[in-house]
Image (cartoon, rainbow, N blue to C red; front, side, top):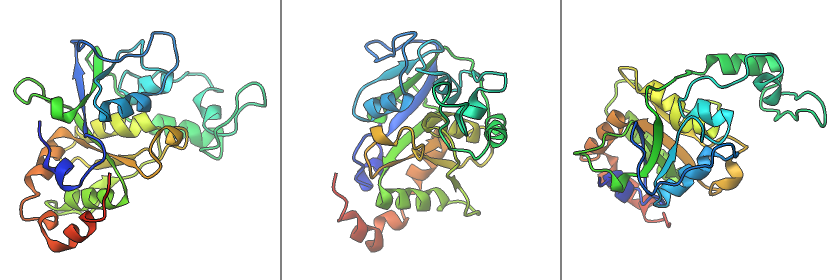
Length: 246
């Protein structure tokens, strides 16, 4: 599947299609069951041309299970995600990440996530250029974008809407903002794009100048269709486009 957005914005990496399926793709990269791994590392690999796959036993961590839509895997008892995201429970026991001021605020964050248990066995990350639209329909499309490219994506996401808040940047884990939250947006009549990779934990494994921009597939198609006649074809964008180097 060709993407004019990819071409016009001079993106460094291929957009990544996120698919839900009951069929495991052949020759896909997958974490070993029981070993820790980061979903974003697999997203990076997909953006660079690899097909990657997850199931409920190979999501890398409990946060990955949540972020991929494999249900609510967070511990139900106090002293879990609430302390992990905030103050911790003492040196040598559970270090806190300091992302929320208190365990109570961290717990509220977890409770407000749009927890989803998708009725599929696998989540697949695949370079968009390898998608055959006659056989596969992605749930989501993930872009990696620098500041100039992100600016263009934000404008394009709002181009054909009667509102101006069609892009959100919620606090959350990298995998949540790349998959779980955009999937939830896709269930609404007017889905919004989700900017992500603001997760401090995963920033070290992402190019320093890039963030993610994820859209439900219908919104991706809307944005592709709206390029013609938009700012993308005009001189102000072309001036910026000239300075984008991969």
